[in-house]
Length: 93
Image 1 (spheres, rainbow, N blue to C red):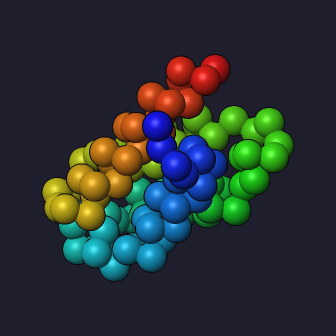
Image 2: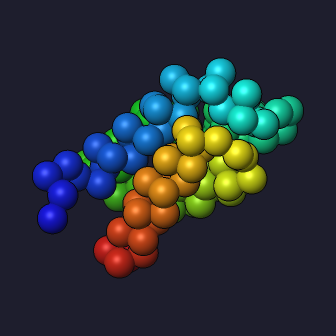
């Protein structure tokens, strides 16, 4: 059982993606994928999913899709975390 709530983990992975954007660019993130990452990560970073019944699932999946094709430790770590969050979101639904 995780001490951290899924809502907190969602915000953390989104903020990590934004903070690590330079590294992700070095790992191959470009153009439309870069814009998509920013859009979905910002939506996840600021959304109060724990307090309001907003569904983070579409943003989690799209953010994962953007990161999946990259090659590097940062993107791999983020994809693993997103996989866990997506699985958790599916179990709750």
